Image 1 (cartoon, rainbow, N blue to C red):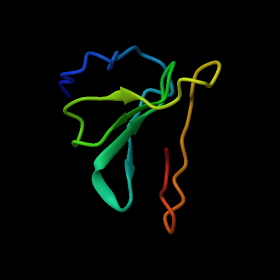
Image 2: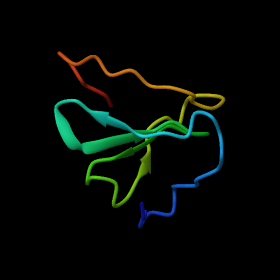
Image 3: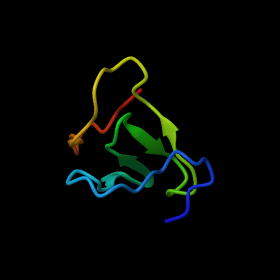
Image 4: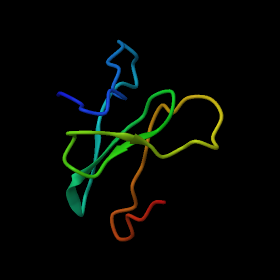
Length: 69
């Protein structure tokens, strides 16, 4: 996957995976140091967890209410 924003760093961590929103295939999350999100199918990513500390190893999306900020 190419990422125009240059946020995507593919390091061989066990948690290096993508999570697709069940109601919007263009919304893709990547757990990493920060939690990254793409709203354009992975063409670019932005940080969505600036106030969190540590790194993100997993993400669960509630299928009936997949909201985030």
